[in-house]
Image (tube, rainbow, N blue to C red):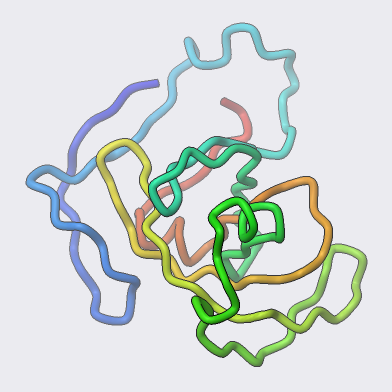
Length: 149
């Protein structure tokens, strides 16, 4: 994986982004495909630093219009109902059922040197993942995920 820097522009409607002297751009090369079985188009699952903790089983989903937190992470971070802001818009689960969120919480999410404040919608349903990071987070980072690598 190669890392380079490029200029970034701040937008007031985006989540707050920590100021960095040199913005980070993340890239992949053929070397990053070593030891993967091709064709490789599995779900992209990573470890991210969320709320100051290394969080495993984070799904990166370019198709999701929301950033989601599931019960395992909510409990693991020792969050309480009073930590949540109200969020009343229902969501659709993977099974096609309507899900009413428990609330919304803003937490720092770190990738390398970038720290972005993310509004995570907390839902109380089972998932193999702890979190889904979707388009809002990817857009703020100016990132594109690669299932190939």
